[in-house]
Image (cartoon, rainbow, N blue to C red; front, side):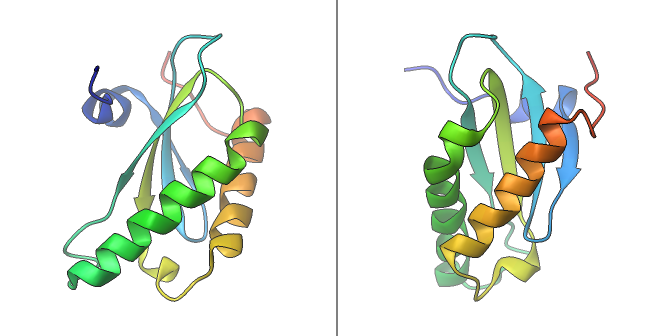
Length: 111
């Protein structure tokens, strides 16, 4: 099993900001399905319960929206403080907006 390339996405990818998350996006294999990793900082969320809920929200929202997202990308989703207390449908809407920005080219890929 190959480890998800978080560091590579953060080094070589480009950020797209949303209301509840910042998504770092890196173009990978064109035919491959998109993959995502979630990062939730202790500095932003002090309690483990809050960090785990934010990670669950990000993962679930990505899983539910991955069919609508452009394929062949690696995503690193970083939770913002505003995600606290939000529902999955709010995070899904945010990811749809981020995916639309990425599809429209409103981000600058580094390669």
